[in-house]
Length: 330
Ligand code: KG4
Ligand code: ZN
Image (cartoon, rainbow, N blue to C red; front, side, top):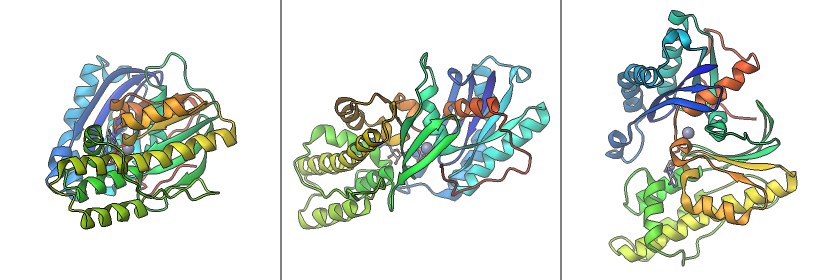
């Protein structure tokens, strides 16, 4: 079964063709990072206009690279939330137009669920249930129990900033640029995590919180003339990143132990951080699966993989599918 995936929830215009939920036939991503970097973050109006310009060429490229004529497609999967309303609308409306013109079924996909399904791509042995999923991106930090395909139970989420958002803001405070996650990781390679930043453990809860850490960084930078001192900036970046990772890894591994899951699945842009994956792989007794970096950040292959299981379960959408910017999972 060949599914065309479409993803426009944030600042990546993406289309992909995936066979049987695992084999990637094409995976095209047009990133808007350079356009938004000059503003220090995503400008929603600019993002939706850019999706309008890119979506048709991106889909055409995905179809060509997959060597799959339209008549060989079995369905379309499109992200309908969570995300920026104006951006989601572009993908959903294009998906409906193609579905109508090519007489194909289509299914609306939750972007958070799609991040989890990146773990099914290019895999001979799919993950075993029950799994504990940690989705860490620019907008979300969610801990979700997955008991089977489409069966999710939310355990915890961030009470304020998402993990990626905290890293993005830290990079901004340190005047390092956007997006912050990869830049902080690069700086951390040059420094040592020798400074103590606070960790919000929120004992008894699976929730996360990163805004206190961000405030602590702000005060540290004000008091210690960090900016301009490159070795101190590297140590601050390494220590801040360590504080974020410490909480994410420790709380997830503890929850995996409590819930007796068979596997931990990671997903979302922050899961491409090598310090985080190294720490997970070395400290968890439960097997940990992480997609390669290009499948952790936003892409449409994960949307198509997720769509395959929706189609298998007969979970189709109708033409009155609307975007849901604040959609949650579980
Ligand atoms: O999943 P994603 O591409 O988009 C959303 O759904 O939000 O995640 C983007 C987030 C950004 O906050 C970015 O700074 C972070 O992922 N990120 C990273 C790394 N690469 C991207 N964070 C830490 N380390 C990285 N290598
Ligand atoms: Zn994402």
